[in-house]
Each structure stands twice: as C-alpha cells, then as structure tokens.
Image 1 (cartoon, rainbow, N blue to C red):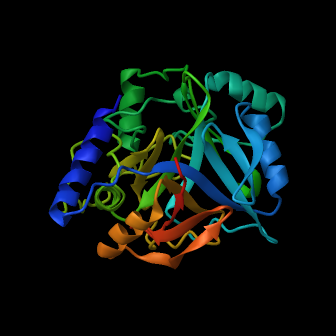
Image 2 (image 1 turned 45 degrees about the vertical axis):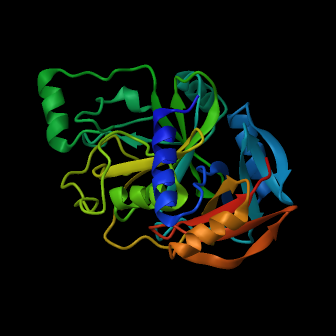
Length: 328
C-alpha cells in the first residue's frame, strides 16, 4: 500500500511529466551511504558488533556493511578522512528496539559515546529523554524555554530517546528507540535553505516530502535561520533547529536543519561522508530528466560500478548523490 507521502510524490512527478510530455519516473530507492575509512574491515566489524542486525558484505567490488536492504560502502584511504569544513551530511543512524538496553551494552563494552549537552551549565546526558523534552514542535528547548521548564517543574520524560556513538574515523552514529525493529533509518543533514532543498529533491528526484509542516513553494522557501539555539545538542553551545525539513527514499529519511555556521557548506567528496546513493531500475531516463532540468553532474557520463552503471550529481548544498542502476 502506498503511503500518503509516496502518493503525493507520484502525483507531483506525474504533473511534472505531463508538463514535459514524458512518462513519470517513480521515486528512487535508498541504496547506500558511502564512507571513506582508513580501515574498512575494522569499521565494518565495529558496526556489526554495535548493531546485530547488520552483516559484513561486499557490493560493487567494495567492502560493505549490509543493513537490511541498505548498504554502507567503504573506500580505503591512507589518512583519516576530514569532517571539517562542514558538508551537507552531518551523521547517520539506526532505529533500535530499546535505546537504554543498547546504552547499557555500550557502557559495559567500553564503546565510545558522545554526550548531549543540556544547555544548563555543564550539564550533559547520554540519552535525549534524560533532559527536558523538546517543545514547540522541535526536539529541543531554547535557553528561555529551559528556564521556563525549570520554573514550571517540567521533568525529563525518560524512556525512549536518541543517543550517539563516537564511531570509526570520527563518524557520528545515532541510535534511537524504542522502535519495532533495528534498522538503518536516516541520514541527517544540513542545508543552506532547508525548504528550498526539499523542493529540489521533490522536483528533480521525485522524493516524497518528509517531516511535519506545510508544503512550501519557490515563493516562500527561503526562511531565515531562527534566532535561538536549542538543547539537547552535541555542541555545548547548542544548535539551530529552525528551519528544518526533509524527504524520504523508501523507509530511509533524509532529515536536515539549516546550516549551523556562518560559512557555506562544502562539497562532500573526499570527506568522511563522501556521498549517498539512490537506486533506479533504468539509468538513462533519469539522466535525460536531470540534464533537461540543468542539474549539475559531478561525473558527466555513466561509469561502471561493479556489474552495473552509475552517475553522480550534486544536490542543493553540494552533497554528492550517486544514482545506481539496479535492475528489478
């Protein structure tokens, strides 16, 4: 059964195709996240220990982590891949069935964790639900909202929440629960203009809209970054959560917030999070569509990837996106 979001995406794609007098292309699937690593085998072993549903594999001639129908691919590099300057890709993560059970296991096994700062002095927690819950439709609270929570006796909810691992090569890995099953579920990103980026993915990649809030248009997609940072946050100084948006590919969400710093986001190629890939049953119609829409190609012609073909385009905030031909 098609979800409402997928039905909307198909409808929008059909409308675009009608205007172009071409058949509508269904949304791509999420295929893989591609990381650079100094030791892919060790990295894969790390992930299989922390997330038991995953397994070591190969794909396209590259070492891979298989996680459900999604892959995390690795390219070996000689020096630790950079994570700065900031690119559009921030971190990635899994749903888990019991976040607190995972946390207890990680502590027992001396797995490196990343704290979430609470915004109250030097306070920090390791699961988001151990500090004040978010408000106003976001996952955080501003300084003023924290003081209001303290004054009115708002308490941490406990139970399920989100938390982070300090992973191989400096990867930030989120684990979130309590969910029905363990699975790779998201790539969290930053965008220069979050709502305009959402429109870009909807128009060019026929992506279903993700997240809450109204559908924006080109007339109103440019929204100023909110004035207040909020907590909990991986940065002690907090983070900007407004505006935020996202899209879906299969059951993997690309969620994003507005760029945090003052400098433009840089390209992802060569960084730790090198690119992500979407699967399409036939590459040529997508190449024709994207070229007709003046989408930037990072690699102009299709290239061989294992026993299939791929192309690479650039997203609205310089994220590299690979389209892989996967015959169904």
